[in-house]
Length: 366
Image 1: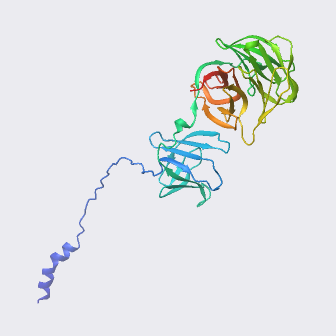
Image 2: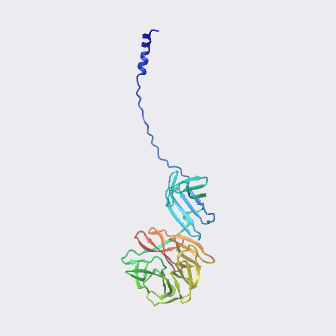
Image 3: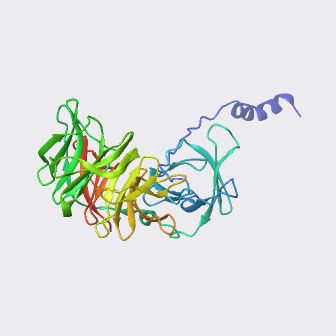
């Protein structure tokens, strides 16, 4: 073939092949709503103890609806704790119960949580149990608040938060500090006013109890060993309530039916006796025990454990009947080791968040 003719025939192809076609690229952005990862740990779990001899129980309820965790546990003596916290998690990390973010994984019905700063080291492990088996709302009772009286923040006052006090109808007998002096006070709970006061026999802290049937105010220094004392009303002369000295008494109470007087120490010892007589040991706690123990009624006692009110019996053996928490919009929920009862009325001391001061709360057991 003629070379010129071949070149002419191929020329259009060479021209087209040498041209670059321009194209426009368009990007389409699709907005999709965020979908949280499906988290597998919601529900009720029982902690698997690393020590097989450990008979205590610890539960955690992770509530998907509320986003809160409820940690419920018992100790060796049967006392319960209940703590709430928010749940924050991804598909790899979880935080609940006030802990840091920790890695976790699921293995069947087992929920394994690892140490946050030691990769691969198990911190806690739980086994799934049916929802409703244990309920946070039933784990502790809730005290019914029927009245409270706020002590306020008057200059010069310091409040006694670790001893029993007395109940006389709408009045309370208290031991507090004012400008360097410890006094016995009579407080009107209807208006929050002190109606009378007298210097304590010795300028120190006291445990008090008021026996309404005989207008007797029982009292004793709560540090050191002394005979317990009694007087008629607030101003009467002192005489011996116990013929022997007792050490570190933090609470005094009475059985209104039998007349038995009870005195309990800061280290879990309960004494019993009668007015003017010799007091002897009735019961000694081992392990953990309630504080500020006072006789209630029907052979039952009240005390404070970890900011909760405990109803219990000591015969034939120590047994917790029920624990109660203080829930009130004015209270921080923590009961101090300062309570009183006359067998009917119950008063406890707690902190008032609204006024940033201490308050006394009259409560009933549901």
